Length: 113
Image 1: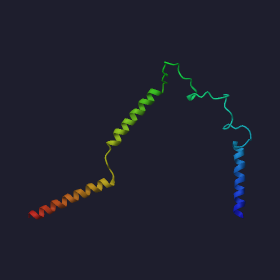
Image 2 (image 1 turned 60 degrees about the vertical axis):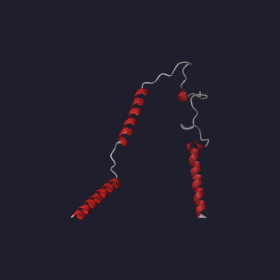
Image 3 (image 1 turned 90 degrees about the vertical axis):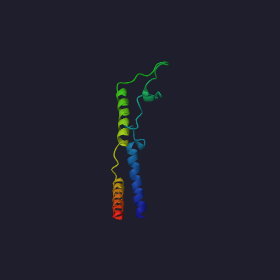
Image 4 (image 1 turned 180 degrees about the vertical axis):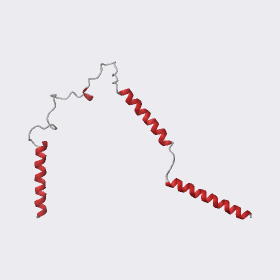
């Protein structure tokens, strides 16, 4: 019984808060008010396309942005592929190989004596 009462109170509070935040018909809000145009133009970024046969002009920010993006990808690709392998597994493997080599050298020296 107390669970049903608590859930109904919670549901009531949520519904009233949704109505007051634009979920209902409580009037216009800045999130749900209509735009300044009667209907959208349907153009990307609201820009009219250039006339046929003409290409779009680049904006001032485009060339530096594209160059920087390309150089970042190249630098990261080269840098990350050339970074040293410093994992604990590689270190342990190298140490195990060194010990194995040392043991075989000691065994070979003991046999030759």
